[in-house]
Length: 232
Image (cartoon, rainbow, N blue to C red; front, side, top):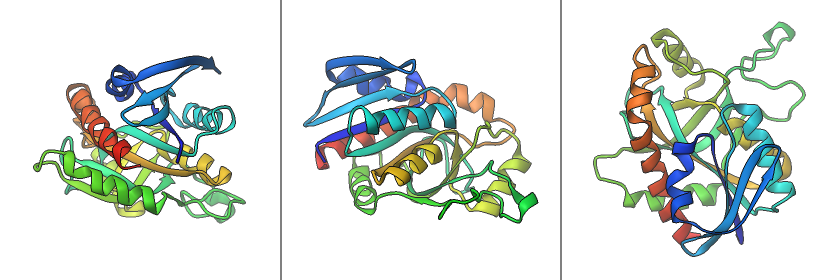
């Protein structure tokens, strides 16, 4: 893998990486800024996509079409769905599902995208293995799980919604971009993986937890990604 694309939705999710990059080129396309350069021993393209599935999908397709990235990594924060997860724990994507797709009126299951061969977008097994190996860099108190990540254009902040998503989809956590990036990569046959750190528990206190813990959670996912780049 010669060129790695890295996408975060918010400034907090890309700040640590940008500060450590040696930037050689900056381009603005579709109102998204792409910084190309070196980070550690790898050549990367880093972008802040903006929040939500459409922004993330636009960013991912530009990474593939314009920058010709060999793989895409989505990092950032997420709300925990699994009761076993705590603030700042890390989830590595085994697969992504869009939880807000609902075409049940036409006989589809919730989360199922009409006329697609699959609605479950599996991450690259080799990248998963390398992220799991890189996780040794994290504090021993940080739990690292590999599992399903859910995405939707919603900030989940009600306990009943959290419990339903966990029971119905079996997701470890929920966020707002990863499944869109995963779908773009699937369609373009580009390897991808997601790294998410828990900023909140997607419950009735989610808004307060998110504001308090986003920076620390984002630092955890960035720290893991920096180690991953040394293994690629």
